[in-house]
Amino acid sequence: MPEPNESKHRYWFPAKKYGWGWGFPSVWQGWATLFLYLGAISLGAYLFAPAEKTTAFIVLSIVVSVLLIVIAWAKGEPPRWRWGKE
Image (cartoon, rainbow, N blue to C red; front, top):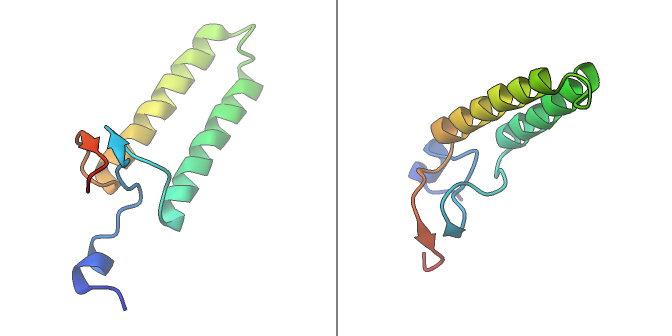
């Protein structure tokens, strides 16, 4: 049975064991976000062929990546440097 605080504070993106940042998603919302990100990058590569429309593809990639980072920051475990001892 989950602890009361655990169910209330379930992170979409848990912190990495070593280093700074987030690991793979731990709940379906995180996976959905990750797959939407990958789908947006793939669709961008289809619509803005990187060899022909390089600038448009780079701008789209940056915007979508920043959006992913904002979501991970809001819904993920607070980032800090970790040494794997926790």
